[in-house]
Image (cartoon, rainbow, N blue to C red; front, side, top):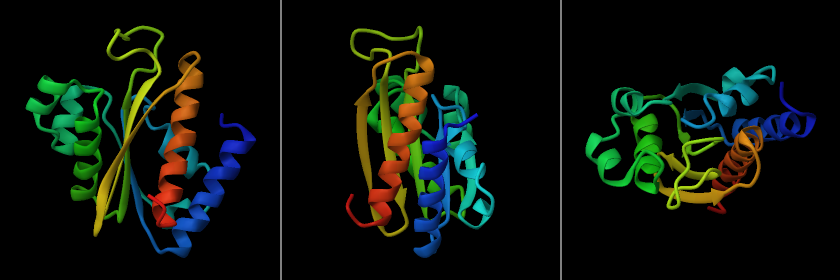
Amino acid sequence: MFDAQLLHDAAELLKLCRRARLKVATAESCTGGLIAGCMTEIGGSSDVIERGFVTYSNEAKIEMLGVPKMLITLHGAVSEQVARAMAEGALSRSLADLTIAVTGVAGPGGGTKEKPVGLVHFACAGRGRPTIAHHEAFPGDRAAVRDATVQTAFSIIRHTVQGNA
């Protein structure tokens, strides 16, 4: 299901989090659980992965993560503000030390001029750390966008754990 490089990256990320004694939770929209799925493909991941929230719909973001409905109304589900609220909501609703949130337009439809297919917003929240946000516009089809989103999420977690974010 996942290519060898992504599984290698997941295993290395788990080792890094394990050494830092960090539990991780995910809050995923456009990836539908692929970040958590890839990490839990690795044996022994349960000592790092605390939980994953798949919040594909706006209602799920509101109910499961406490994203204010007004944020979605004002900025749209695919926005920095909603990604930050997702990451912070996952942190407050879990036992994790660090969370990663993603929300975007994977395609093939759903894109607009302002929010084209391939646009993904990321946020990473942690206990005692400022929430960071980042966005990318990935090229390619749905599978390519989702794969690049998982890779980028891993990179953000890695940089955060290493203190480079």
